[in-house]
Amino acid sequence: MSNPWIYRAPAIGWGFLILYICLAPVDDLDPGFTIQVSDKLVHFLLYFSWVVLLYFGSSRAYKRRLSRRKMLAYWITAAIIGGTIEFLQGAMDFGRNADVMDGLANTTGAMVGIISSRLFHKILE
Image (cartoon, rainbow, N blue to C red; front, side):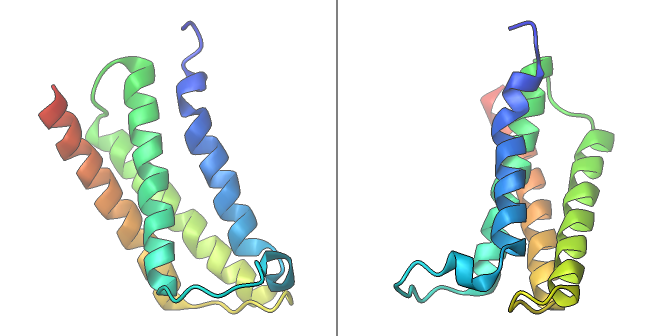
């Protein structure tokens, strides 16, 4: 493929899904049934999978492991976006509240995701 952005398309789509899920009014997201799962686990998994998609999309596009600088940039970007979303949840009146622990779960999920991706990529080589 001549366009490396095609490999990042799943990560970009996942990022927009995170934005929608986290910023949409609560009433728009009511599926009509309840599932008992930790909110923090959901935040962790959303950001974990997002940076895994970013890592492997970028490494596949350039056919090599990512540099530590790029890994750090992905992690910092995910942490900033997660913090901004939490701030916006508190600022908007859509039935959502800002939670520092959600932000911490976002950041932790991104960190574990980027480290896991790097380790898994080393195993695959």
